[in-house]
Image (cartoon, helix red, strand yellow):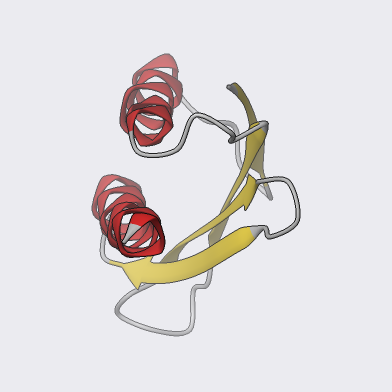
Length: 93
């Protein structure tokens, strides 16, 4: 699975890039038909949960999309991946 990371209005550290790669790549275990993941990280300075993570999984016939807000990017990424993991496991049933 190819992972495309886009950050808006800031430059991601190597640690953050590695965190995204580590968390999102684990989703391939739940659905082997995933072609790629489009991850976008942004900051919304107007709220307490100012870090935003959008994840779009490109899957044949049915893309999955999740948007999560959190205090840190790591928390937002983890939350988004958890939701996508649940969606993928429910889809298999």
